[in-house]
Length: 75
Image (cartoon, rainbow, N blue to C red; front, side, top):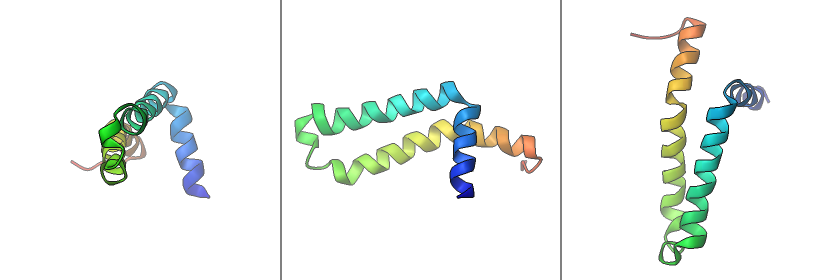
């Protein structure tokens, strides 16, 4: 349960970025599954990959900042 609490804390610490990311993920999901009919049959294969990539690119600066604040940052 500590992981969920940490995720909630990060979400609430960066509300604007978190809401923008949520909107982008919703738009990706709707675009691939609802609006673009030929992609529906292939969406189970590439939609999770697309969403994971989007999240990782968006939260990378947040995690860098958190590492620097905790003193665990690398080079």
